[in-house]
Structures are given as C-alpha cells and as structure tokens.
Image (cartoon, rainbow, N blue to C red):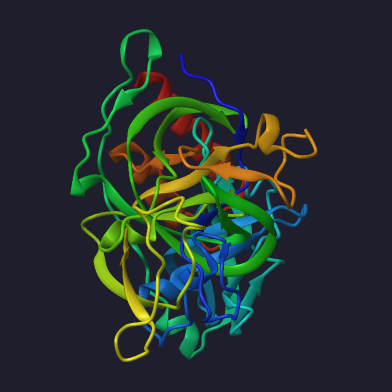
Length: 368
C-alpha cells in the first residue's frame, strides 16, 4: 500500500503569479497570485466557491450546492466541504468574495450546522445566510458529476488513470501562497483570497485524512505548460481543503492573469514566463466551473530538506517541489446520494433525524 505524509488543510497554490495584486512571482491559494479569482456578477458559478470557517478555529474551502428559504424568508445554504474542515457540530460560517478586492458576504454562526460523512473526508454544512437578498438569489447551486474511479490494484497499490482530457480539472480555494523557485515553489505564508489551478488526475490511491481511510483521486504539481489549459498548473497549500474539483464536463470560463516569472536563469525552459498580450493587456487563462467531480482533502507535507523547521507543517521558506502529490474525494453515485440526503435536511434537522441518517449511511456503507 502506498503511504504518504499528508497535510490535510491544503490550500491550492497554482503556478501563476501576477501583477493583478502587484505581487509578481507569488503563488497564492488555489494557484499563484496571478490566478486570483475576481468577484463576479450575480449568477457566475465562481461566486459559489466559499471560505468555510469552523467555530473551533479551523478553516478551509467549500461549494454552494443547495439553497433553501424557510417560511420566515431566512435563507440557508448547503455547502459541500471536507469533514476535517468542519469537525464541530454547529456554528460554521461562510465568507464570499476575496478580501483583497471585497468581501461580498460573511454569514453563518448560530443556526448553522454540519454533517460529516462517516467513512470519507466529506461534509455538508448548512449555513444560515439570513434574510434573502439579491446576492443570495444570485448564488448558483453548483452541479455535481457522478462517476466511479477504478479500484485499487493488487495489494492495495495505486491505480494509474489515463492521461485524458476527461481527467483534467480546475480546483478553486483559499489560503497559502508561494513563489516560484528552481524546481518548484517556495511557501511564503497564508492569505484568505480565492484562486484557481488546473491539473489532471493521475491515479487512485488509499489515504487517511480526517480520521477516515478511503480511496483518493490524486494529482501532481508538474511544470506548467507554455499555453492551453495546463498553463495554469499548480499545487496545494493549507486552506484549500474542501474546495471543488471542477471536471471536464463543466462550463468553460476565462480569468485574466497578469505577467509573472515562472523560471529563473533558464532553469525551466519548458515553462516560459507568463506575460501581457501584444496589446499590453492581461492574458486570459482557461478554467472549468460548475460541474464538481471531487472535493480537495490533502496534499503532501514538506519533508527532509524541504521542511526548514522539521515539523511537518507548512511554514514560510518550506519548499514544494515539482512532483508533489495532492488529492481528494471523487463524487461517486453513493456519495452524491448522501449529499442529496444532507441537502434535504437543510435548514434545521432534528437530532433524531440526524442520528437516523447517520445510521442509515453507515449501514449502506457496510453493505458496499
């Protein structure tokens, strides 16, 4: 069986940096800083990727998958995330927008709750939005793909996935930042801004995160392509856990990305610098959105010489080399059925209903 040293509060840090923020060479959250996700008009799926805050102090990312309005005109959001992001039973918050531009909503707290899946690192949080307004009405309920990755190989060994456009995805999240360096990316700290990265699923492997052992869909931080979808290649840093993997069937979007240096002194000729177009304007990068095929849950921790403080945590100065692995939970038919059940409980399940649902889920999993 393949084993890893995992960081389960992983933010995605793509390989693009940009002067959109005046931070050339810095990669933040689910992508380098240049792959910063702008606040969009109502109705854009990108607005439905949110920062999730647990009352115990942990945080990560999530996706709006359902909305409910009660008889008093109070709106509630069903937010898909990772179980280790939402360990508390109640009191969660969701933050919309990016602080470097503008926070669009900060909601939740009393009246919010979370239900964690018993066997995989997945959760649905019911977030009390408050009185319904135009922003609530404009939030898109993101759709989900339903698919079953191949089983593990003999003895639980990882199973390779084909290098296919069908396995390409965009991840979005909030969190850490880094700078491109010779052979990878140097971690520089944390932010709460939303960014994206593009990648391709490469294997299925057994992992343990959030106290749960399950089969993960996994991907690597590779040298970014010169152009096309994989020009936005990236890696993960703490804070991206719970964020969505938007699959090939999802809607195509474009995001402006400012100039950045992606190689130093010619060490990486395969990843040329990202610059302005011939008219001096930011160039658009492709991304996918709206069709969630998985949820981000982990990334390799720094080890050896890449871990300056030798503590297994991401600290400024630690290094993420090309070849670093990250991964998450695939949204299988069984998990999608569980998510649908959780959305049916929004806004306010009784304790008896929650216990009954938990027992039903455990029984179903034992029969699988």
